[in-house]
Image (cartoon, each protein chain N blue to C red):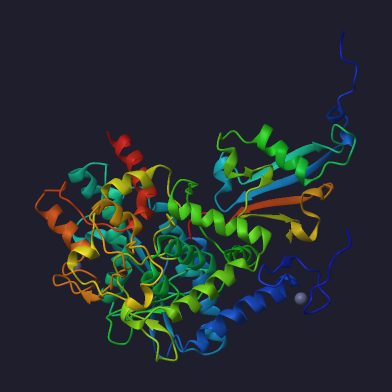
Length: 116
Length: 428
Ligand SMILES: [Zn+2]
Ligand SMILES: [Zn+2]
């Protein structure tokens, strides 16, 4: 049997371009690259709009090559001490992990845990 | 989601939630209140006097970069009349400081401040690379940590500057308070809460103007002001004691953001209950000033050490093995009966006392951390000969494997050792 489900990421109207940035030392976990331009599906497997919670898991599973996942995610949450800014706003103002990604969003992860 | 408006100006969009009070602020109002609060700290503690020459311990990291930027701003805005100088320490490890020193050099231009970089070779006659050549890669973290602790003071003295400010923030202070609480080290807990160490009789005073500033807000300030700072590689470790204290703080902050300042305030209140003869802090001064013991007080970040106390794993166990009794041996104990009631003979330093294994009294003894000066170099020390001089003596005799006396805080430099191990491996 062959799968006949269409792959949503193939259709451009079904993907969202976003810019993900890592600073404060986190870039070291992501191939030493500060900026990652990503194209993410607009809907998750259940058909819900993708949110930051989905993005964090995606970054951890697909983008991060470093094995030290716990430096970024602890107990399925962004590690305490890492700030998340959505278009420069604290993600707590935007609903945190439930914030639905919009085209051209800038999602910034800043670690406060590194050298001062 | 509807845009939230700033609680202060009620016109611009809120971008920041303040951890201490959940206030939602726009960028401009946040920057204004962050600076105003540090100005408040400086004025209420009479930290500076007009004409003071102040060395900013600059590592190129976020805390010291924000400190330099804010002090420059406030000095101009409120006419403090300060002469601000950036002071950086170069441990002399090939490649290790290149990026951070480049950052500090750019900061010197950006903030129009003179920059002085002082090397371990100037201060001690040895670069860390040379130390490694003699002692090998094992144990050099001890040397680097002990040397670093005095480096800013020695560097300032070389420049004829009597006051060094460091970028220690509220998270650092809370972390140190917790560590000392968990160790049962009340004298050090009390001293770690002071905004200033040293007084007018000391060669060099140290202070932390960012003591009440959340690390989160420091990072946000640097971000929104687009400050140029440098971060080292990932350094923290769940195994190390300081790393655990840091994780605890960050977890508390997530549940209750005010917890960090609450710990700082609790530490200050506890400090008031510790007898003066134990802490060396003079309570009668309106401005709480403590004498410093330059060896073993250093709290995490802020200074030039961008290892920031978040060291690599497993080092703590190594350190514990190496820990030797120190202050106790100098027979400067005082029996503090007022604190003896509940204790079970635990020494002020959990680890050091464990390694002694001798029978102890049932009443609690707090070791009076007599804060004198080193007979050899004249720097503040709780022992006749300070640790730096003891280590130097061994190095100069080329007898590096001597027994050395170190504090728990020496763990802070283990990351550097890891870096240096890499350097050593690369070299041969
Ligand atoms: Zn505002
Ligand atoms: Zn000495």
